[in-house]
Length: 97
Image 1 (cartoon, rainbow, N blue to C red):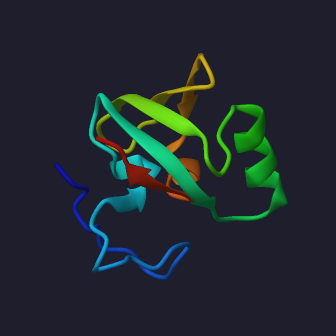
Image 2: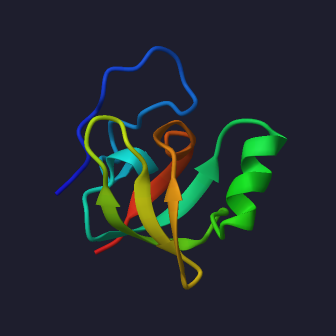
Image 3: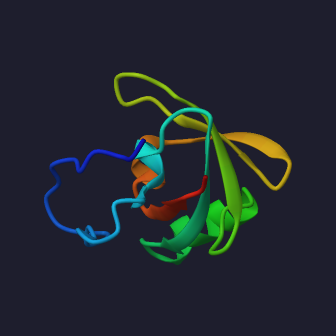
């Protein structure tokens, strides 16, 4: 199960046609694990995510993605946190088996 390629205007991340297992955090299917590859955005968003346990190399478990543009409920570093959809779009991940 891989993330669909959503229609976007501009980066934060270029989509890799050769690596369909790479996607942003907001399109990871429910109950899937993913490893953070990189984080886009400025120092503020990077700092906020780091305080939540989301940084390059971190392993995340996506519990649920709320419908209609709601937050993504994830487990990071033993804590369950809700990340807004806009912030989740800045986190590039690799899906894990």
